[in-house]
Length: 103
Image (cartoon, rainbow, N blue to C red; front, side, top):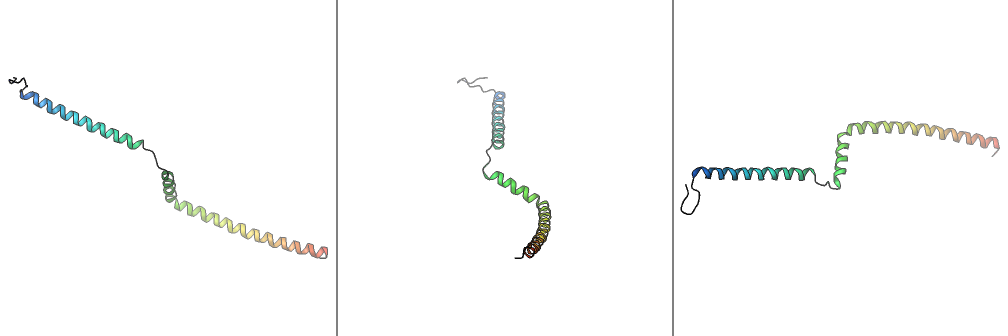
């Protein structure tokens, strides 16, 4: 059925136009969502990104870091004590050498 102006007045055709419009809107929405997702995954990372990652890794491993630093401090104590002994022995040798030399 057509009216005098040539417009299509068949009620079945109006439903198709609405479903086509809905499909178009759904397609636009899906395309926009994909575009946003791609843009978010390919964004440039700022300068502080690496620094933030390092601090997160350090924060995650604070227990390991504390244990390692405790071991290092223990080793430093041993090295210090042994070096004190070496210095004392060297000073004794020096004084013996001076006595032998008559100075």
